[in-house]
Amino acid sequence: MAQLLQSILDQVRPTTLIDIGITALLIYWLFSLIRGTRAVRLVIGVSVLFLVYAAAQALGLRLLSQILQTGAVVGVFALVVVFQPELRRALERIGRVGSLAWLLSPAAQREAEHVAAEVARAAALLSAEGHGALIVLERETGLEEIAETGVMIHGDLSADLLVTIFMPRSALHDGAVLIRGSTILAAGALLPLAETTVHTERFGTRHRAALGITEQTDAVVVVISEENRQVSLVERARIVRNLNEVQLGRALIALLNPAGGRRTPFGRGPDRPEGPTGGRAPRLSNLGGMVARRRARADRSRTEDDSAAPAASVRTTH
Image (cartoon, rainbow, N blue to C red; front, side, top):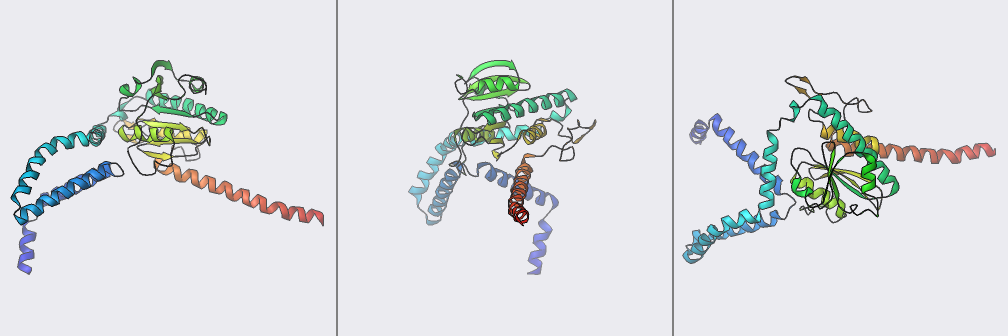
C-alpha cells in the first residue's frame, strides 16, 4: 500500500496540480454562469442522455448506441443554438478581463461624479412624485443594439431632462433611458427580461428588465418603482433596494469610477468625495447591508421615542 501511494505521489508534479486547479475553477465558473437560468434543465437533460449512452455501451446495446452517436453530431450544433445566451454572456465576461479603464484620465472621474449626481437627483425627484423610471448607464459593453429599439436622443444629461422623459403622459416614459458617458443616448428602449428563475416572480416588469440587461452586460441600472416609490440599483443581476439620493450617488460613483480609488502603476486613482464611509464609496455587494443597518437603527430610535413618550406624560400628570 505504501509503495502504491509512493508511486502515485511520484507521478504528481506541480504542473499537474496547476492543471487540476485551473480545470476545477473553469468548471465552477461555468456552473456559476448558468446557475438560476433555464440552461440548468438543459444541462440535466444532456447529462441524462450521456448516462443512457454510457449504459448502452456497457450493456452492448449497439442499435441504441448508434442512434445516440448519430444524434450527438447534430446535438453539438443544437447546443450552440440552445446555449446562445449563456455563450454570449461568457464571452462578454471574458472580454471584461482585459479592461484598461484604470488608465483613463481624471476627466473621466469628474464625468462619473457629474453623471452620478444628476441621476441620483432625478431618481429622488421621480421617487417623490411617484413616477416609475428605468435608467441604464452604459459602461464597457456597448448597448447600441438596445438603443436602436427606442428613440435616439443624443442629448446632454441632466436631472430635469430625465424627469421630463419619465412624466406619466410622456410618449417615452414606458421604456428605458440609456446613458452613455454624460449623454442621454436613447429613450423608450426595450430591455430583455431576466433569464434567471430565482426571485423573478416577486419583481415587476421594470425590475425584471433591469435584471435582464445586467445579466447580459456590465451596465448599471437605476429603477424607480411606481407602486412603492423605492429606488433600486442593479448591477450584475444583483439588486439593492430602498436607496436615498446620497446612497445612490455614492454607489454610482463607485461603479462608474474607472480607477475605483485603487492604486495604479501611475499613482493612486482619483479621490472620491468624503462621506460617512470615510471617503470611500460603498460597493454594491455591501451597500445592501449598509442600508439594512441604517433602517434598523432608525426603527430602534423610533421605538425608543414611542416608549419614552408615555413615561413623560405620566410624569407630567403627577
